[in-house]
Image (cartoon, rainbow over all chains, first blue to last red; front, side, top):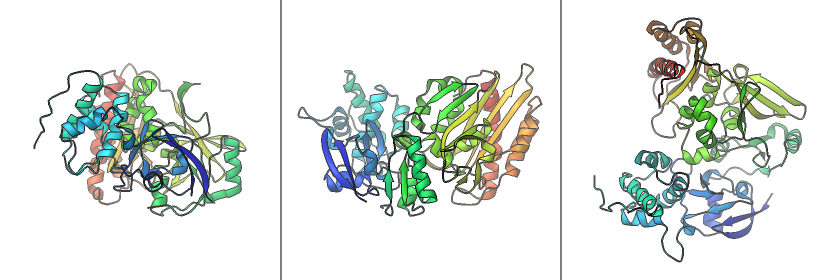
Length: 167
Length: 293
């Protein structure tokens, strides 16, 4: 029952034999050893497994690997370049947007698509935009600030203060 | 969690999909967005032997007005409704509904056709479609048939779609001038199914008489439900507080909610009563051109 699929992950092509029932997140983590994408709830709730599939953020625990055949997958490993961190990663670093870090790869991938569609989101739009990603550490405030920082940086605006918010 | 083994095909045409359905009968399931089916398969609530992935079939994703209908292709994603110009300008009820469906990532995958074909009274589009008196286009190798939304839901996860058929389009009669519609569901948190949800569409003539009333209820009945008595108390009348109150009262009496973690029966009836009144008032405001968010 195995099928041959070809997926491009962070720009690199991979040909793999998969069982139809194998989930995309398992292929990413266990076959390609890209373990930045996390499995949290495994029930489409927490967003830790968020990746981009042809540029759209999806929860890879609820997509079959075979559905990604011929498509482009982007994971957190593809964000930083030789020049340095992606502005979102920099924003999370500067603003204490993570404590334990488990939700961070999913937050980053979700925020990446959000800023592509809406480069200057309001705070409400950011909060609504990450409503499918759970963080149990930060209380979200510093994540929102991190995304605002990235938005400003990517638009060439002055980045807001990075004083962390303790509540 | 990994689903039980199954075989898979992603046909490029509807004809191929029909022939696969012919071959595999009710052992096969159609895979659209997969965000109801795959979780059920992971939890082993569903173990189809064959998945027919229709995502590679072109021409099933569109939102357009044509021949007096708003036509929505079955593979249209929730996210596409959210960003559709025509939805923003003419059908705000879909914005009310889609922004309350799951979360952005799920809406990137989940389809309107799947939301309806799944036959789950907890889904949001069925009540909206009832309020708008939509029709469902069902296709098979023999051709197409059109089923009114009231005849579509047979029971728990059971719909008019037969094992050899595929839901391909939802058609909504383009409402006349003076129409307003609104949807809201009470949810415990983002992404939850409704504790209760109410969809309302009303048309008012120039004297303020209600010439059309459609009211659908989410997750307070084994199947998506029309609040028929509430519609009757509105249609043909000027809408005053008393009639609106009665409509809410009737909806709360006629629904059949079950007590669960989202609330007990009495609580859900109370929610239906309040939401029905609120959505009627919101639909009236929109019908009169009063902008509400």
